[in-house]
Image 1 (cartoon, helix red, strand yellow):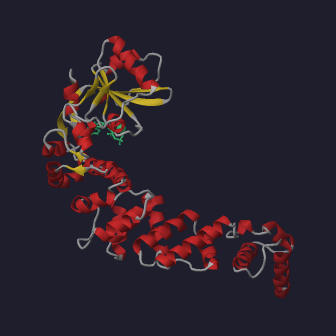
Image 2 (image 1 turned 60 degrees about the vertical axis):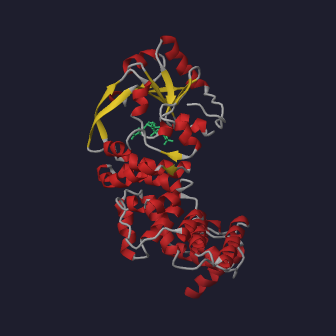
Image 3 (image 1 turned 45 degrees about the horizontal axis):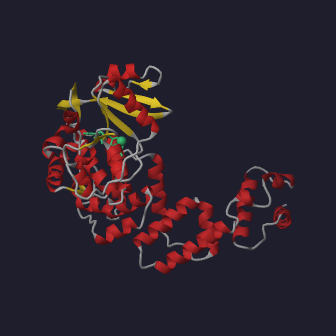
Length: 414
Ligand code: ATP
Ligand code: MG
């Protein structure tokens, strides 16, 4: 495939990949970089992992690297992982996948002699481009054209490809979201038709793809266009909308947790029980569930407008949680811009100026209180009382001032 104006960057391979290629070349085997790494190199992005494919059989691959640690975990499917200078590189023998089980995994894989067969079994055209430094790019399915027009398209018949392996449905949405690509029409329609087959995919895999999808640059566009597909694995209320206003709110957030919150917020249609069923539909880690619950409870109140209340907030939750809360508040209430700006300024001031917001920053500690006669629970309670006084500026954070309060209080009791 010739491209009249070449918009693609020149490919330079890291040294460890070049040295792997040399070994195959010298032994007379074919070898190519393939998949996500080639796609990313052509987009000018540094690949985060490396996949290669070869005409050599797995045992021949192993024989090429007697001096280097290799993992044989994927060997049944033809994959050997070579650990060169601690960099894992997956090297897979050219293969054809036949006879899929359960809409998910090939029952048998058969090794093949050709790169064409190997590219044909790959999911999307942009993931099926191969590269060798001497032989250049091999692009059987015009992945370069699709990269240029930012299109996500199945290799082959999309209905067949999604039926073989339903995980590809979510991979399609994930790649469109992270790459900012449009799902090609036939691919999109097949993806919808095959969506019920997602029930064959493990919840863990769905969760991991969904998380990547949410973090992508085009996540909101994909969510709103494919809400019907998402509803196969998340119990989204049928009255949910994810249109212009919702998309704006979503994009105002950039972390996973804030985006997830905003998405669930619109899908739960603010019904109490809906949150629980959404959060239990996928194996969200407890850290995520707790983060979402903290945000929900923080969202019950408007953001602090005074320094003292901001100190109280930051004494209760981490700076990160408070920042997420302010972000989400602003995303969902864009008209309350002044309230947000005020709160955000206070947030920065309290942290930058080192206001006392925790017992550990007080000028007295538990030992000091013990020495003047306080015991057990009294100590913790007194420290919290002192913290309140300092946060409310009723007393300076000086040892003498704090101790005299403790002594006076103790004397009164005594
Ligand atoms: P990334 O690593 O950035 O998530 P990737 O494209 O490298 O994206 P991997 O899961 O690392 O994705 O897989 C490497 C390659 O293997 C893909 O580019 C694709 O060619 C092929 N592949 C992976 N999973 C499938 C699948 N379920 N069906 C068909 N081909 C697949
Ligand atoms: Mg990869």
